[in-house]
Amino acid sequence: MAYSEKVIDHYENPRNVGSFEKDDTTVGTGMVGAPACGDVMKLQIKVNEQGVIEDAKFKTYGCGSAIASSSLVTEWVKGKTVDEAQAIKNTDIAEELALPPVKIHCSVLAEDAIKAAVKDFKDRSQK
Amino acid sequence: MANAQRNYFELFGLEPNFFVDQKDLSSKLKRLLQSAHPDRHAQGGSQQQMLAMQKTTRLNDAFAVLKHPVKRAQYLLQIEKDIDTTKDHTVNDPEFLMQQLELREELDNLTQQKDASALMDFADKIEMMAEEQETALGELFKQDDWDLEALKVSIYKLQFLHKTLHDIELAEDKILD
Image (cartoon, rainbow over all chains, first blue to last red; front, side, top):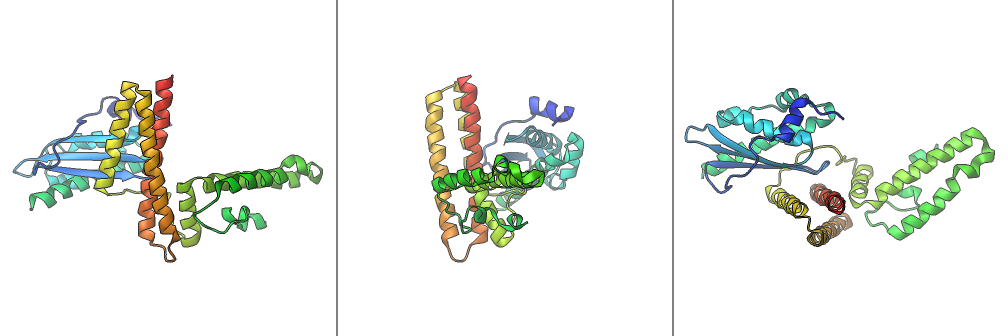
């Protein structure tokens, strides 16, 4: 199967790979996985006092599309509020990366990861 | 066609059950494949041969499923409870997934260091974890009333461990090249 140029670009030059300290109260961590393909995705956001995402990092073990989807999401969420980030749709990711139907689940995983990260941030900042 | 109605277990004369004697399964496969071999039906004309070929394919499919603990568990849930656990879905179990991520990182490091003996130790560790997970899954299937949620979780955990085992094989190939 041929990957689109954008997928290859994100795969070869992934943006924002890495980690934040997950116990930091300004950080939200989303961990998701897909058992069918064995993909594991960690997506983290660093949020300022205004509720704006200042930085984002990811670490993904999986296929090129999963890596590209999470890389793209970390680019997109920077500068967004957490609520805006939560509104990101997998269809937008799939469209941007021109994912073929069999790889749509990779974009779903990335959407689930950012939602989980925002939820984690909100849960822990309320404490 | 009677064969199409029989499930994979029945093809091998077995009751649907998670516990399958693998030695017995292999010897049954050999015997069944022999009797279904198209050459044995050479006198029977093209239709007979076609049926024999279909039977061979189905036997091989069945064997592949019954041999593999994850596929066998998924198949069992499918035929007994009509639950499909093979489709893509997202799991959200931070603790388990963090552990999986760390295992993959460890594998990456070992691959980069080209440390074949450490990689073998790592493979042993994961195999042990997979065996433990398979035992736990077996315990769930032993219960009279299946806890379907627990079964699903147990299956997906085993899937992740098998994925790591698969990645270890790829890493071993890379190092040996």
